[in-house]
Length: 434
Image (cartoon, rainbow, N blue to C red; front, side, top):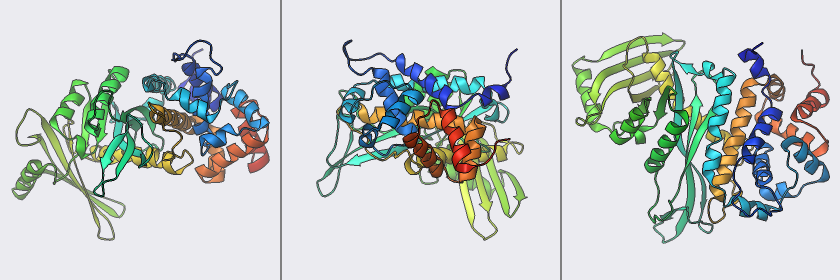
């Protein structure tokens, strides 16, 4: 008998997801000669385990006790752990594209367990938030892909940034990473890369991996330009993009003129202690000229303390009274990739801004992708696994949950993550699962 979505979700746990990830790592071609001491899947899995177990550095991971080594074998299938120097050297030559290809596989799994049904927006769409993040900067360490910045005092700094795309929903806590693209100097090009160039590559990669998926792309004002919108629409997707008076003067001038002539559609309602005011106009040009026509939404939230929050977006969706509140919520949902993904990676144990290794080629990029994959697995478990959430609820903070996991991992021999969580439940939290 075919299992229901609920039954399939109940089977989601770290053991199944980690072994699926290991199987994917085994399919990645090894760039080295055949007679190697450390298999590439073991090295990739070691990098993944660092972020899964929230190790603060590669050195701390290398200094394994007998218990840790045995647990690495049992939990992650790692037969042999290399030194931190060897790990950096091996991962530095891995093509990040092989890791990018693993995000669509997790998306298919989310679809199989019915999770995408919970993320449907307006009964049809999926919201894909795309944003950039800066995660490395140094005046001493650099590689050939580093972005460079000349400071006024003559110093030069080197940095790495990336764009990430995540599935979000206004009513859901979890975000699911669906892709990433490094903002880095391209081979043979001396000029710095930028977010818009990286966005073109990311959009192409997303289209190849998720063609036919009804995405609404939600992004900040940097991307509210004709070439980018044309690429979104050529992919068959819709968009909700933030716009600002300073960067879209013609659009806002038209808005103010129509507002003065009372030619705007409006809607107001009160919810709790807040009053929501909406103003919109459909089928207007983005910059007063060109072929792109958009629908414009201006929103004010009047709070009980007298403060007013203002937001504005353009969208391919025709704005009506019946959907204006939903479009607003989707537009504001863009911040989830910052709050739920980037801030979590920086502040809740993943050590995103720590230099796990820079290398000479792609090490910085590879480590960032392994971190995102570990985060994605954590989010899938958080969304589906009852035991994980009961422990989290009891401990009240995510960092304390990771501390308990690491405490058991360092102290007890365990055969599986399920056994590890049973120890936490029975010996530390001391509550009974119904």
